[in-house]
Amino acid sequence: MRTRWWVGALLAGLFSSIALGQEGMRAFVGGRIITVSGEVVENGVLLLRGNKIANVGPLDRVLVPAGVPVEDVSGKVIIPGLVDTHSHIGQVEGGDRSAPIQPDVRVMDSINVRHSSFQRAQAGGITTANIMPGSGHLMSGQTLYLKLRDGDVIDDLLLFTPDGRIAGGMKMANGTNSRRDPPFPGTRAKSAALVREQFIKAQEYRDKIARAGEDPEKMPDRDLAMEALVEVLEGKRVVHYHTHRHDDVLTIFRLREEFGFQVVLHHVSDAWKVADEIAAAGVPSSIILVDSPGGKLEARYLLFESGAALERAGALVAFHTDDYITDSRLFLRQPALGVRAGMSREVALQAVTLAPAKMMDLDDRIGSLQAGKDADFVILSGDPFSVYTRVLETWVEGVKVFDRDNEKDRLIAEGGYGAGNPRFESLDCLTEAGGR
Image (cartoon, rainbow, N blue to C red; front, side):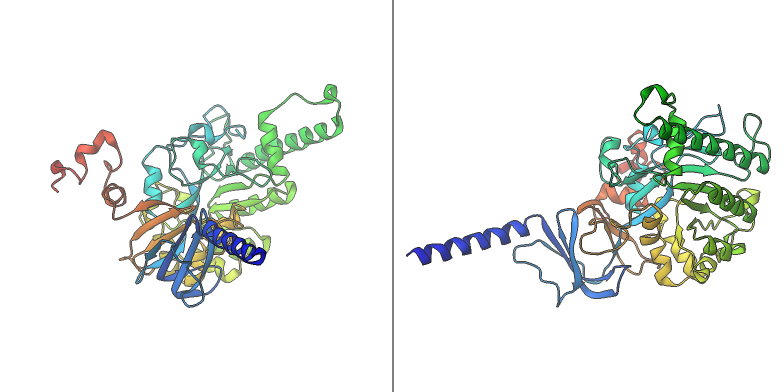
């Protein structure tokens, strides 16, 4: 009798554990899964547990437990959630005209997360974004890395570093954007001199704190700008550097060598001219391919071949939207244009997933479809680089945030200016006035 009771208790515990393990699970079965970090899986299974990926692999190797909800994605393609290293969604603002260097400014204090631009990004398959201030300053403020969850306040979208800090970088720029009337610099040489001056002040501020030790009487007065720059010097905050001309790129390398900060180059119109130098420096580049005429003079030599040149040189390369420069809904056009100009398909897809995740120090969580990573992924109607392919669903941490079958979501994905703006709802295509 005692033995039967023990076996019964063991089986009850086993079944309870299985049921507990299945809670919050979901499977996507039958699609073509491009993991980015490994082999492409035909007729695959993506298995989720809560907000994480539990397993991914061929249908004949991944067990889907009984009772787990299954979505048939046969004929469709699953890729990791797209990562945008450079975006201005959310009506973001940075520094003002009072000074060319403003590292104390936080874009966190100026982002409207209820703005429809967040839904446009979701409609484009973007699940993580680096929200940046503009490039009209040598230093325009602290950027913010956001998960594009559905949320009502900024706190709902925040990401955190392992030591508990709000994740983000520092926006810097050189070239023509920051050259204006005083107090802004009038030349490239003065621009670099002002940056050096501020980093030297930050070094002195850091050293004063170190010398003070536990003595509050010796501590310098608190300086928010210097605190932010010390984070840059200590490698806690990556510098996202707006730059275009090849000589401006080399100036950044000199500053980096002097002060030791971690940097990602942005835009880099002349990347094809200095691809070998960029690779030798071990500096990643986040580029944009603008396929319409116009723009600034220093971007006149922008070529679609920059991505291929960086790939051949062995440099880490990503693409970004700079939304609205490129609409977030059309983000996948960037790597497609890169492939057209000579990039390999593998590196081009990495350039909107795993490569930007690495540039933001988030690749342990996002950028590829692997067990243990966040359940961020996109379901496509076909090949990622086909002009006919549409984003069907976008999932962030196991939650669907975009569904093209939903009328309101489809309006965001396909509509014009009035889409997602309640002030212009009479102009949208879902109303009788819109002709539907």
